[in-house]
Image 1 (cartoon, one colour):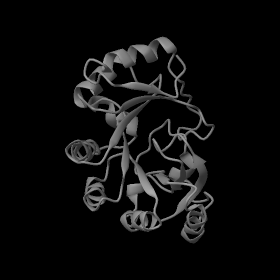
Image 2 (image 1 turned 135 degrees about the vertical axis):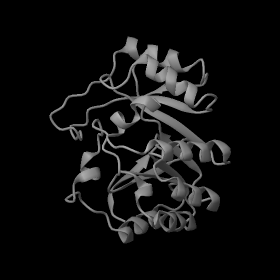
Image 3 (image 1 turned 90 degrees about the horizontal axis):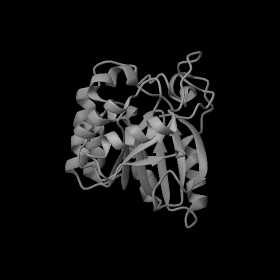
Image 4 (image 1 turned 135 degrees about the horizontal axis):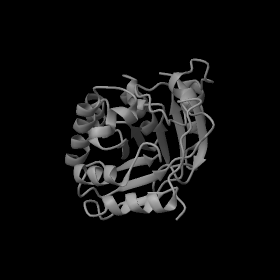
Length: 232
C-alpha cells in the first residue's frame, strides 16, 4: 500500500479528536469532480513511506489522539486492516473514509473493531450513482456497506459533495428516502482544488439558494442533515 501524503494536524477531519490525516494512493472510482486526482490516477504522486509515517506517529504520542485515513480509497488496499492495527497499537483512535465499494473489507474492519468512526460517501441518488462515481456496477456494494454501518455499532457519518452540474434538489429527496433516519448526514460544498479529475471540464459549487433547497429536500427523511463547508 502506498501513502501519498500526510496532514500533520487537523481539528476538522476526525470529530472530537486532535488528529493527523494520512492519504492512501489509488481509487476504484473516477468521480469527474474529484479534487485529489493526483492520488487517484498519477503514479508520480510523492510517496510517504510507512516507516516514516509510523515514526511520525510515535513522536506524536500524547499530542495527537486520532488518525484519519483517507484517499484515494483506503479500502482499495487488502492490507488496510494490518495498517489500522499498527495505528491502534500506538494508542491512536482511527477514522476511516470510504466510498463503500469494498463491503467485505469494511466488514472485516468493523468486526475487528479497527475503526472508531467511519465516514462514507453517498455520491448521489441511486439513479445517478454511476454517472457521479464515474464507474459502473458499484451500487450493490455501496448499498451493502451502508447496511453494515446501519446495523453495526461503530459511529459513522454519511456525506454527499454537492456539485452544481451533477445534483438537483430531487436527487437529495431520493437520497433522503434511501438513508432515512441517518443520525449524521452532511451535504458538503464542492471546492475546485485545481486538481480536478475531469481536467478541462469545469464544475461549480451550487448557489446558496440551490444548496438550501437540497438541504430542505433531504430533511423530511433525515431531520438532522446539516451543511458542511458551505456558506449560507
